Length: 211
Image (cartoon, rainbow, N blue to C red; front, top):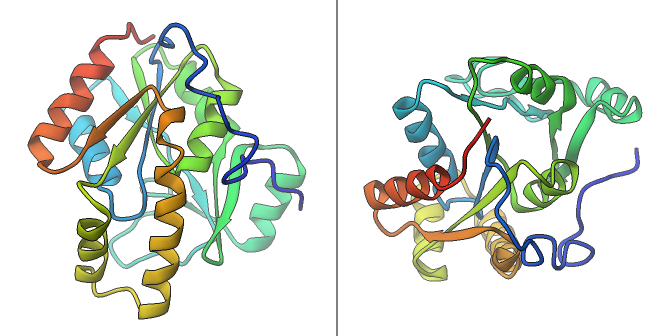
């Protein structure tokens, strides 16, 4: 199963910074290191804008108790996910800490063809964001949510009480690499205050026309 997403670091260098004008913003990709707050911000934006819709990703990780199939993720078996990769049905995908995540082409096509949808919101990792930019260079607006500091990011992750010491260190190592790629994005917003970060993200998105 050959992976088709962008390496960290590597071939993605210059993807965003070489753009002379902003894309349309029909597709809005919000990315951050784990614990950066991208999911919370994405949900707030969706609550505040009825014609913005969420692009549901596929994953092989186990479903949590409060999650719903087709709403939070499309939960697939490893075999189902691999078959979709082999069939070319994913815009991007990668394995993160033992589970696979990816963006389904038919999910994006469905939202793009829906006239009631003005913006499609993606909540995906940094590598996935850069791959979406490659697939939709004229439409994908990339926003990087940065933590106030590496120390505060570590504190946020440790407060989750879901990370072992080993997994915390893995996430921190990955976060430092991902933050080095923030200059590939159209905008970097520091999430030191959630309300302000949401407002800044929304204002930046509003600077593009959408669908």
